[in-house]
Length: 62
Image (cartoon, rainbow, N blue to C red; front, top):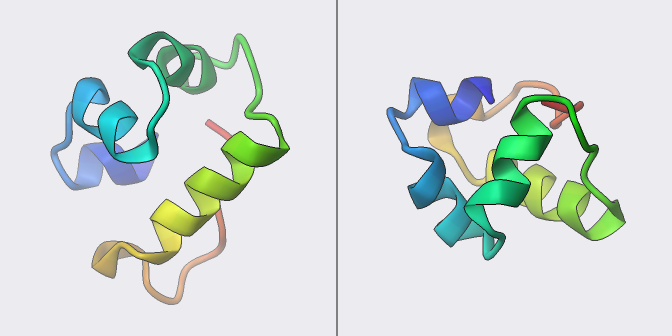
């Protein structure tokens, strides 16, 4: 996930912020699974709250 890397966050840190397992985050990032409606909403909300992402398009997948 580009924004995670821009912020220098580990998968563990982002998973904790989102309240999902590291495994779930890894599967999203590697394209093996797409986020469910709830997962998509969590990612969109998280991205909107990041100062680095202000004014950019919402999350559209891994």
